[in-house]
Image 1 (tube, one colour):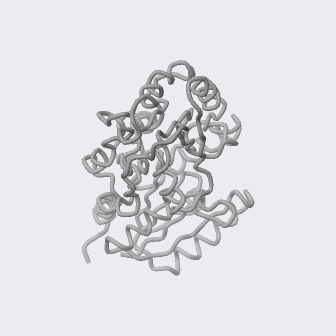
Image 2 (spheres, rainbow, N blue to C red; image 1 turned 60 degrees about the vertical axis):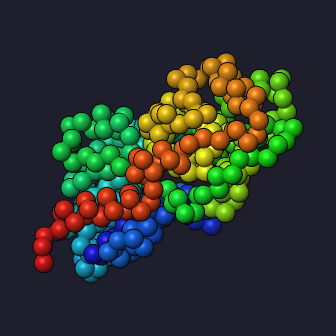
Length: 321
């Protein structure tokens, strides 16, 4: 099975974890399933005109590539569909940013309208959480809820943290991105420091090895985001049995249901985060763990099982030889 993957999310030298979950899903499909193919990366961060340049380039690539199907990651990467219709099945995975406001209002309206136009033209739409399913309820017959999986062989650092005078808190993302809500994180940390010294480690532009090492150091991952799809760092922390405190965003509530030492806070008030964090602080270091890895396995969100489900979706649209 030959697939053309089209995405505007893919690691680049100055942003090494940008779209890493897309890259890893494609790699998992190639390693675990009967899938080969090419990746066409639209570098919209470099130049927005690259979206328009992709139209002719993709027409040529699709006509000559002898692909069995196309899988788009992120709605606006499907811009080409507004100009021509491939004669093979087309799927799109939506990653939430194209549907929910993360930047300016005009950017949000343009992205959402373009994404909805793309949704009309594809055969299947993979979404990450129930909020996205509700938003796209008019296309229910096309929808599949399937978050990206996590490589459990890679993320397997499940040893408890070390005893330390400092309580180590992980911030999941780039502090400069507004939707990550670092001001709320800072407000919470300021209050915690009235009780005990706190060290902050930001998960920003780290290699996979560095992410795994940092997950082994933190006492808790604290997510204060206002918008998420199905955050990979949450699943990676779960795979390493780290405690997690998070706002109620994306599919985090589903992920953390019944996960020990982990809490979803339905609030953006710093005071509402303090009690669960102080409870973790009061535990001995060896008890600051969770059963997140077992929950991921139960949900079938390891990369191998997710690959199998995606491959099954592909096969359901291909005609028998």
